[in-house]
Amino acid sequence: MQNRVLTLDEFIFQKQSVVNYASGELSGLLRDIGLASKIIHRDVNKAGLIDVLGDAGKENVQGEGVKKLDVIANDTFISSLRVSGQCAGVASEELENFIAFTGSRSERAKYVVLLDPLDGSSNIDVNVSVGTIFSILRRKTSDGPCQLEDFLQKGVEQVASGYVIYGSSTMLVYTTGHGVNGFTLDPSIGEFCLSHPDILLPSDGSIYSINHGHRWNFSNGVKKYIDHCINSAGDRDKPYSLRYIGSMVADIHRNLIKGGIFMYPLSKSYPNGKLRLLYECNPMAFIVEQAGGRANDGQTRIMEIDPYELHQRSQIFMGSPKMMDKLEQCLKVDYVTEEVEG
Ligand code: P6P
Image 1: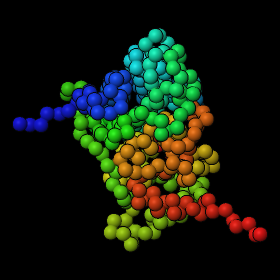
Image 2: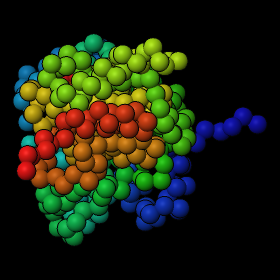
Image 3: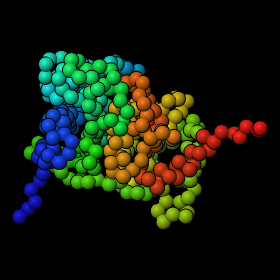
Image 4: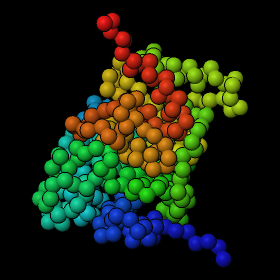
């Protein structure tokens, strides 16, 4: 008998009984995110047809040009989470401040969600994969509208995180701290179906992912690692390859499946790193660690960084453990302080 597909909703319901969200609220929240993702899939897949390409003619809080699909994705997720009843509020890359949902159900909800609604949006107009990144935290305050402190929590406090990649197929990949599972959207039935159970990141890899164009800006340690990747071709049965899509979701997803390392170091343009800690680095770090990899800022585990503001940025290195070992060895040159002559 042909194996029947397991849908995201069925999977979430099955897992609800064995993991720490038996109350069903987190299950409902994950389903709401799945629904919003299907709507974004529809809009991304016909972007060229319904004139949502091009700029929305304004800038977001990051001072970056906002694409129309950014706005649509942001509004879609906020609408879905507002009516969810399981979400007390949302922080988004597209919004300067968080939104506290009002109404008795939302004000009693246990969770807040942090979002990059459409990551890699600069790729929208050239038909390259883009993605959504989400992070779910249990609120620290109880009852009433959520507060900023509900969002400013370390990555280790996440109860779930995940991403949706809108590529050759649309996939939702998430974790609740019990492994990583991937679901591919089957448009013919409108369901995300389990396609990549228990994803494990290969312990080593041959793909390094970095924006080489910023090389002159990198620290000596990062340059040392890049030189290792370029010069060690001879002593490896499989030389390294540089792969960089410019969409964090796409680069991380490829590395999750094939093995590899992703790096976005500090640079003169981004003295604190470019990627945002709360809704890019933390959720992706949770996924990578749950799949057996590591994620740090060169010195500190990403998920241990204590946040001080919603849109703070961080340098990030994440990927296969053996590649992270070599990188960390190279980065030591950046942190060795000169011995002070006694
Ligand atoms: P750069 C996309 O804008 C993004 O936030 C990430 O998805 C991606 O990894 C990075 O920025 C790309 O930045 O400077 O290489 O274009």
